[in-house]
Amino acid sequence: MEKKKLIRGRPDALNDKIMHYCPGCGHGIVHRIVAEVVDELGIKDRFVGIAPVGCSVFAYWYFNTDFHQAAHGRAPAVASGIKRARPELIVMSYQGDGDLAAIGTAEIVHAANRGENITVIFINNAIYGMTGGQMAPTTLIGQKSTTTPLGRDPRKAGFPIKISEMLAVLPGSRYIERTTVTSPKEVNKTKKAIKKAFELQMKGEGFTMVEVLSPCPTNWRLTPKDALKFVEEKMVEYYPLGVFKDEPVFND
Amino acid sequence: MEKVMMKGNEALAEGALRGGCQCYFGYPITPQSEVAEYMSRRMPELGRVFLQTESEVATINYLYGAAGAGVRCMTTSSSPGISLMQEGISYLIGAELPCLIANVVRGGPGLGNIQPAQADYWQATKGGTHGDCRMIVLAPNSVQEMFDFARDAFDLAEKYRNPVFILADGALGQMMEPVELKPFLEFDPHKNDSWATTGAKNREPHVITSIHLEPEEMEEFNRHLQAKYLLMEKEEVRWEEYQTNEDDLDILIVAYGIASRVCRNAVDDLRASGIKAGLLRPITLWPFPKAEIRRFADRKIPILVVELNMGQMLEDVLLAVEGKTLVDFYGRYAGIIPSADEVVRKAFDTLKKVGK
Image 1 (cartoon, chains in turn brown, green):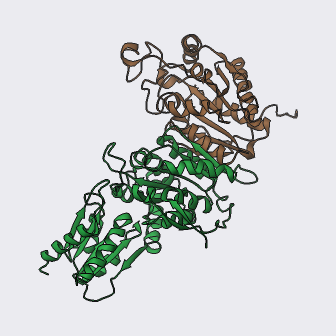
Image 2 (image 1 turned 90 degrees about the horizontal axis):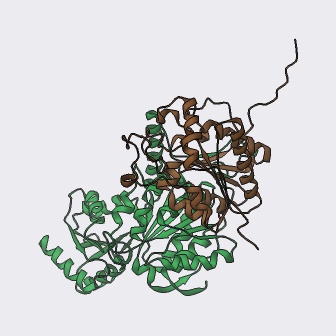
Image 3 (image 1 turned 90 degrees about the vertical axis):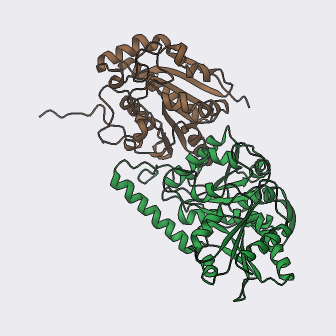
């Protein structure tokens, strides 16, 4: 029999538990990307992830690394607390859009503005997933949700918030990029961005964040395939992909 | 040992850092801002962490992260700030993390005022926290105790893997007294390595969390917490008595914190007028010295509770005495600290009610 060669296996930083995420959800892809990067940088034994409140509350079920589950929106504060206590650790705050862009706006703004040496992975799927599809701060204009049944009306519900653009203008942010995971090409770009963010943290350069536009077929009431199309056509239009900030913060 | 004049807030800070505090997180609020100011100078001197945060809501979560990383850490605030921290305190208890939280209490409710008060007794002992939460609550009554309790708090917190809470008041925070500065505590910085987020090197990953989705698991965890609380009630009750030795005591005054200082003078004054008065001062407000108070109730000695609020500890005293004796109350509020004369006059009223 022909001898088979393993070309690509499961990253060491990820375990083999079956994930609880819905079919077509972006979390699983981003988890794997993070795990691959952790492996490649050899930081598994000094890595701490922060799990938020939201669909990824149980992110720690899947990682072979230390994890700390935070209260809703407070992940950047928890991450900063850990980083200040043990600066040798590589700390990741993993958050969704409800968590980061609504209830946790104060914490994310101040972590970025302080140039806190942590990395934030921001999953933007324009909806509250775990609670069942309510309007998120990032829900698009006209997008239907269980609390905007007629579509988001900015006169009543305000506008979708562009966090990457906001944080990029703060003097403390080191590196901010928005990516997506709708195709292998985009997945590779996301991986490159996440790797760069962790590398900058390892060099002590300050606050880094990668915003990943991510599909939520279940709560968008779309098939996984149509959900990818929604990201590519609707979300990218309002939330353009690219690097929003990439410059040294501290010149000393 | 060397004695120095210090403000209560500064003594609290110096005590904590001599107890091994590695990280201080805080947000300015009167009347406790001196703690943060003092820490902003002293912590960097010692190569430790000081961080002024964006809010009290955030503060308690910096503490949550640092405590999860296994280092000795603390925050201080005053009443409205402590209200904002309640969710985080619940997480700290739920994730079983040791740390120190101190409240230099002011008047409430709402924005209240910035004067000394004991209005947060309920919040500290019964919790504004969600879930079945308990914390050891220490109530200093001198600048020396602000230092001592803060210095000892981390050992106590680590013993139970639970936050320890210091309930002071604006007067204790602001007043100056001589303090004996005890030396830096020796402690094992690796004591928490068996559960803390130190990086999963040559070991299984550590997870700090307070979520238990399965009902059975949630109940089991709460039974575990209850067992811990029971042990605290057995081991950690602290109180102090003054002039309570005679069998035929006429009246017992129960007061804590700054009010107990006034009541001690009142006891002396009452005795000068021929009344056999005594004072019981709870030092731990939780666990509460129930059995110690019941001893007096069993002997039908009338009790006068004095607080800088409208009657909060009063309820714990009533629970402790189980209706076996008369319990009277005298309270002044937020900046109006009663004089010993006032307490003496009230004690005569109380004695009249029992026909003495």
